Length: 161
Ligand code: INI
Image (cartoon, rainbow, N blue to C red; front, side, top):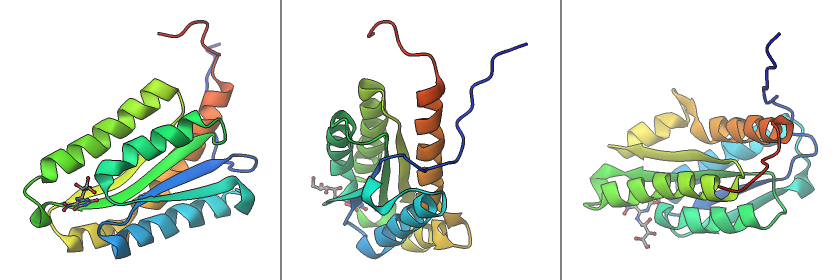
């Protein structure tokens, strides 16, 4: 019989940080609210939730990495909104945010999930921040819970790479 590992969606006893960026702040706030609501609904205690605000999506990875290295959280959720219409350096901001988040997760071994929207227009972002396409902040929070529980269940590493 195969051994199957799966992370469950129980946030009780998990310590979770949410890094939120203030750029496009009203939309980011909706993603943050979605993430917090999802964590609470799955049993996270208020004292076990930390929120850190950063100026823009570009700054998310360094704050996420610091929180992951703190030993005080089991997972980090990142939320923010990058809209192409607003910047010529969309690719850099969006790319560095997503790449930096992935890099921070790999470097620390702590799950760090991506709830950063990258859209053509603010309306497309609104659709994904509690609108008709759901709330990607809530989805990122659930992914963080699942991954934190999976990481606790998986075999421990015998060496660092
Ligand atoms: N930051 C965002 O989070 N979203 C954006 O759409 C955006 N635009 O359009 O420029 C943005 N820029 C700021 C960037 O993230 C940094 O905060 C800034 O460059 C300072 O390092």
